[in-house]
Image (cartoon, rainbow, N blue to C red; front, side, top):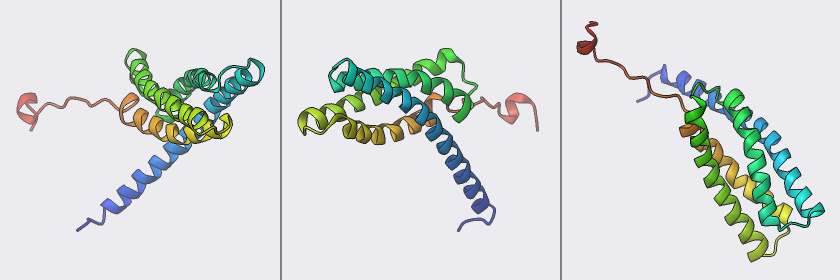
Length: 153
C-alpha cells in the first residue's frame, strides 16, 4: 500500500523530470539547428554523401549540446575531466545509432536524407537524454560514514 506522502513525492519527481526533459528539448533544438545546418550545407552545397554529412552534423551539434546541457539541463558539478569522456561515450553510441539508421534508411530503403534524419533524431534524442541523465551528468554519490565509524549517534 502506498503511503499518503509518497504520492506528492512521486508527483514532484515526475514534474522535475518533465522540466528537465523540456530543458533538454530546448537545448536539443539548438544543437539540431547546428546539426541540420551542417548536414544540409554539406549535402546541398558540397554534394557530400548524406550519411557522412549527417555524422559531421552530429559532431558539430554535440559540441553545442555538451556545453548547454551541462549548464542548463543537468546543472552538473561533475568536473569536465570526468564529464567530457562520459559525454563522449554516450555521444559515440548516439553517433553509431545515427549511422545505422541513416545508412539503413537512405542506402537500404532509398528514403530521402531529411526524413531519414528526422527518424534518426527521434531515436537518438531519447538515448542521449537518458544516457546523460543517468550517467554523464548524474549526481555523484557522496560516501556516508556509518554512525559507528563517524562517532555520531
